[in-house]
Structures are given as structure tokens and as C-alpha cells.
Length: 237
Image (tube, rainbow, N blue to C red; front, side, top):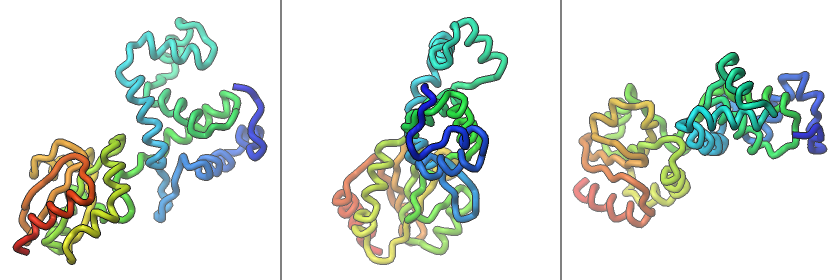
């Protein structure tokens, strides 16, 4: 890293002012401020971080230490000692690498570390898009009581077919009969629902008709396939 930032980023303000760091992370799409003032990373950033988590999560200790050594110009032995001393985790390393890549701004290492530290304290995003009503283990039954004809999509982060399905949601919803309600459920957080309906893959669409479980379908499918499936599931509704 050099000390030459892009024209619209002041290194000194980022180094000294937490608000400046926060604003940069929001402006560049790393962090998102929700309506209730909670803060999470964005889904897009989380997908980038997930690549590094996959790379380093199960990597040998030697690879982990060598990466830290290369990043901070240390010997492997010194890097191993610093990892132990600071309690550096692979997830924190993945966050640092993802921030550095995602911002695409030439910043000093110490500033990138401060930014990554701020990102590490933010919550993870929900895999549920805004156009689906979110439900969970404690709320899906009341949702189904109110909406007996419904489709619940089980989604998760770091899931390419889930992202494809979410891109198609307007067309998928339009393919359903009138009056069908739609909800989204975070599969990683809702084990009771998954156990009750034997869901072990994301994405999975679970169809309910007249308040009863009707069918489920796992994996990505195009909107036209959903149209045929919905017609079969709700034929007698």
C-alpha cells in the first residue's frame, strides 16, 4: 500500500476521524444503515468477504501465517507470534482483505486496518430481500395463520443460486395465483422450520395451501418453472 489516496478521500481524516471512516464505508457500499438505525454490512460486501472466508477458513496454519506475513511485511515466524499475541482470526483476515479489495482505494495499511476493524463490528446482512416479508422460527406460524396460501423461501448468505432467485423474484411472484403471500426465511437462523419441513438446501421454496404444507422445491428454477409448479400446487385452491 502507498500513502496516495484517490482524490475524494483524505487519508488524515480517515486516520483521525471515526465518522469519516464510517461515511466512507457507507458511501462505498460496505455498510448499510437500516431504518431502525442498526448497521450491517451489505449483501454485496458479504458475498465478497465470503470468498476470502472460503479461502482461508480451512487453510493450513502455515498458509494463514504466510498471508499475514506477506500483508504486513513480516517474517512467517513473527507473523505467527503476532497472530497468537493479538488473537487474530481468519474471519478478521478475510474482513481486512475484503475491505481492501472492495473499496478499491489506495490507502495506508493502518487506515485499512481501522476500516476493517469498524466493519468487523457491524452485523451480517439478512439474506431476505426487502420485497419479502421476513419470518423466522418464532414467527412463521402466525404468518401462515394469517396467510394460509403462502410460499416461504428459505435463503442464506454466500449462495449464488439464492442471488439468482432473488433477481427473479418479481417474475416469480407474478407467476403465482392471485392472493398468494410470500415470505423469506434465513435458513442459517431458523433450524426449527428447516427441521419441520425437512429443508437442507438453499434456496428452497416451501408451498402452503389452506394452511397446510403442500410441497417444497430446492435449488434455483426460472420463473416459468415456478409458474407451472404454482399452478399444480394451487389447482384446487
